[in-house]
Image (cartoon, rainbow, N blue to C red; front, side, top):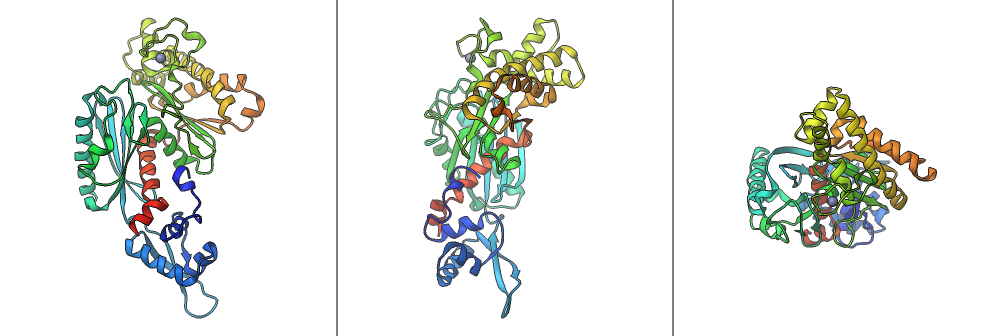
Length: 393
Ligand SMILES: [Zn+2]
């Protein structure tokens, strides 16, 4: 668990403190809750009642009693409310409805260029979100919060994109304000790679405290979890490794205006361009992945070299952050072991032995769902935080 959920469950007052204990889904009796919190049994009874009235917890069977009548046990009621998780990519958007345990109940995606601008894209989100809710037989009132990932830097506090390079019309657009005209609930907005890191962590590595999620697609970026917390940095661009210069890139122009950037050499379009220069008919990163799957040796070598390039930058990250897991995701990760092998080759050869002793470099386990899962988790963490529960109770 990260971020807001890390706040001490016992450090707050009111029903929220009790709820933080019950969030893990494990059923507990009133007596067990009294022991865990140190609160009086009568206080526990009042707070259990108030959380039951909100529908956030429910009775789940009875505990074996040592004598007298059996005691009721209570746990999180995951279906009490739902959240909406949205992943807006450069050319494709996807959204999912999840319950309070983070289980995806329904999802939908379709091609949608982010360059169409915020109103077109967010109108699609609202329409598709209403359809998904209706398909599940849920009411708009069941929606408790919304998480949105965008393919550019985002000021997390305000939910506004800041100078996003591939998102014309989005600069400083008030995303939460616009969405709240349709759904008056909290709207959390973050960079898509950050939310993917949250999704990867929640899905596959709940006990890992130091993780990097690296997205290799049209661009290259990383989400950094250090000490159990997502690191956004001062301006929200922590982990933006795509424009770090690499040795092989000398002189090659990048769309950012610099030369020799990692992204100009190892992103999907960059690999495709390299293969075209060698006379092979490919247009996109996805074409490259297809070639690799068919065993095309030029494509395999190009992807492996891209892995080495990424490894060059990640070697510096390993020295800086000392992660225990580096998960590689994004469309180019579909090329499988060839990309990962290139990353491993360089990171293991060039890092200090102690830093790589327990370092796993793996393909993302959350895969294509990492971003919508992470957006949902972001929304859930906010909705179930002590402050939000106290406001409801
Ligand atoms: Zn660049």
